[in-house]
Every structure is written in C-alpha cells, then in structure tokens.
Image (cartoon, rainbow, N blue to C red; front, side):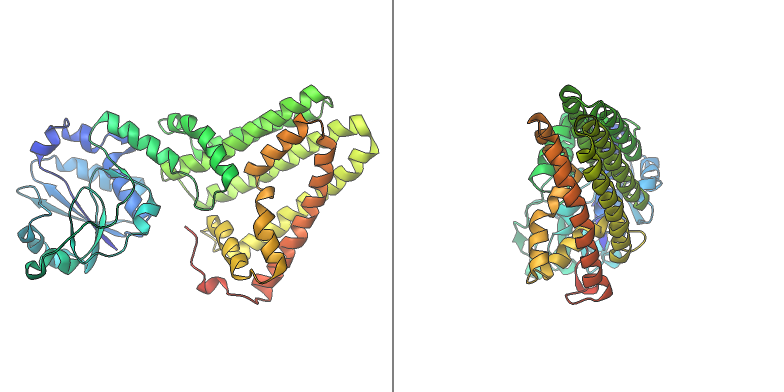
Length: 415
C-alpha cells in the first residue's frame, strides 16, 4: 500500500522552529518524521510518496530515508516549488500518475501506533481535516464533479508541533505500547512501568539488555528464597514481581522504538524460562529447609513439569508460526482455541491459560508468600506445570498433527 506524506512550506515550519528541529525532533528516541513513516510501514505501507518543498534542506529527507528503521520501504520523493495543498484538486491532479488507486494520507507530524492505522477503511470522500491519517480512494481527490466531504474515522494519536506536544505524544505511545491480547494483569503491570519506559526510551538501552536485567533481578530473588525464612521469602517474591515488570518493559520499549525482532521474541522466551527455573529452584531449596521431603517431592515434580512444558511449547511454537514471526504464536493459539470453542478442553483452557503467564504468576506468588502459604504455591505449581505440558501436547496433536478445526491457513494473523 502507498502512503502520501507532504511537508508544509518552510514558512509554516518556521512558526514552530528551525526545520531540522521540527521535522527531526525526537519522540521517545525516534525522529518525528522517521516515526510517522515507520509506524505506517508496520501497518502494511510498503511505499511512500514524500512531497518536499524546495526551500527546505533535502539532506533532512535523505537522512530520514537512510534510517535503518525504514529498511525495506520504497521511497518516491517529489520536490515542489510551493507547498502541496491537499485541499486543492489541481495539486492532486499534478501527481495523478504516481498515485495508487488507494493510498494512505499520512500527516508528517501525526504520532500514533500501527493498530490505529491498520483498521482504517477506504474513504470515497475527502476528509474535513487533513491533520489526521485517512485511507483514500484515488478518485476521491481527483473527481471535482462528485466533490464530497467526509468526517471520516477519528484516528487516535497526537499532532506534534512543539516539545510539549512531543512529551504528550510520548505519554500516548507508552500508554498504547501493550498488546491487543493483554489482560487485566498485564495492563496493570504496564501501567506501573510507564514512567520508567518513557525514561528508557531516551537512552541507548536495548530491549534485550532490559530482558537480561530482569533475569538478574530474578536470580537475586531466587537466592533470597533459598534462605528459607519468611522475611527472605517476601523479599524474593518482591524481586520476582519486579522481574515481571521488567519483562513487560522490554516489549514496550521494542514496540515504541520499532526494535521488534524474531531473535528478541525468542530471547525473551528463553530468558523467561530461565527465570522460572531459577526462582522455582530457590523456592524448593528454601522450603526443603523448612519442610524436608515434602518440598523435595513436589519440587522435583515442578521442575520436571517445567522442563517438559518448555519443550512441548517450543515444538508447538515451531509448528504454529513461521521462522521469522514467532511473536504471532500467542495470538494464533488464541484464535485456534476460539475456533475450537465447542471442545470442552479448548473452552476451559481459554479461560484459565492466563494464569501461567509470567505477568500473572508474579502477582499470585507474591500473594501466597505474603499470606505465608508458599508451600501451597509449590503444590499448585507442581500440578499446574504438569497439566500445562499435557494440554500443550494435546493441542499440538489436535491443531497441527491431526487438525480438526480451522487451520492456520485461514485464520487471520495476529498483529
């Protein structure tokens, strides 16, 4: 899909400051113009027509095009003697031959997220305002004989024209940096992380470095659990909770700064598994000091269940997703189970599967620890981990080896 982006006249730009400062001001660590195009690219835009006034330094456009965040995007640049006016039919007629039949009008300073752009429906009428993105049919801007205005869809986002609106846009991005599948626990965790995420977006700290920091915090918590007394249990549970918050932050930063990658998804899952094993081992050692063989018996069952769950889910992920898109696994499994909701196992698992997520587990471990029932948590976790790999194996056979419901080929890919 094509996007059309027009830079206003130098006179308009100067009202807000120097062209370089206005067009390339950083919003959450990414230059404004780069961010606008990168967001569109992640909403299925593959080519961008940039209309550039002749009296604004073209090197700014070149630096934008060369950004690694825009790799794979095809650019067509058109230098014009005067600013392009989207309200003028003659200005559109001048670029008729390079317009696609359907294109996305992309305001140069509109900060939003890809989900807001991906859901836009094509409009056959010109919008009342050109300050927001709109998906247009080509004839809507060329055919004066059927000239119509449309209020159109309201796209969530922020128009950035100053440092203060840039800060507002950053808060908007952080607030919308979760996933569509987030439940109440993940939303609460991300809410707690917002201020730190915004600060981290202005640093060079990578999502993978944040992931490792979460592992380090969890390992310290595991050592505290292993000391075997209530005070250290609580301290360990609090650190595991912090590790869970850090686990939310790496994905938030990756989405805000367009740093998502297949390796990052794999690495986050790998580190999460190490985190579980480290904390569970710490709990087992601590409870063994208190309860002896009870903890050893259920602890062994827990570790076996965790290892088998990790192995089966890794196999399932490989079958459910393509090599370069492992992040689609959770959404695809949710859709498969929803399509199979007539099956009792699928129906039940859809309601309770969130409890095995790290963002949820950190809450429950903290509550069990504070109430002095860590031994009960161990018992439940031992049962739950073994039920997890058995059910995962059931779904692997049901959906991928002996499919009985709608297959992945005709299920829409999760964003």
